[in-house]
Image 1 (cartoon, rainbow, N blue to C red):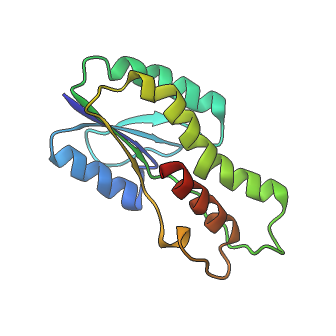
Image 2: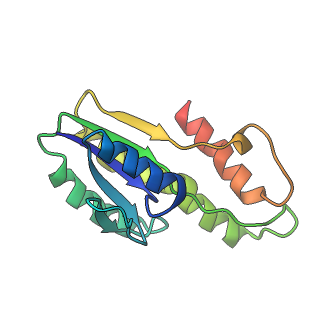
Amino acid sequence: MNIAIITGASVGIGRATAEAFMADGYQVHNLARRPCPAPGVNNLSCDLSSTASIELACKTLETAIVGARSVALVHNASQMLKDSAASCDSDALRRVLETNVVAINTLNHKLLPHLPRSSSVIYVGSTLSEKAVPGSFSYVVSKHAQLGMMR
């Protein structure tokens, strides 16, 4: 059995990714605050800004992946504020980094030791990891950090 664990598979790219994996026969687990409406997705309620919430979800996932042939861990979820260096206070930046960077590290730390050798970790990036545009300060900072983690 092949398994896909996707953060933020409730809408958009995450939902499309979940549907694509399911079409290929994967068992899909969505880690998000909101459920994925696609039939057959196992939704695990998870606040990615909370280490305790992630750790609780990982306990369920560790059991679910036992015996899996391959696991795709897809880091898709992200938070984007409309902000600038002048308008983004440290608390707002910290919240974005918790979801967009720290959650990835926590999931990797908790799950990588349990993944079969044929598994993959996929980071959903952004062109903003290579360039900056006005009004996306905290998102750009977090996507630069993700790129560094990935490399």
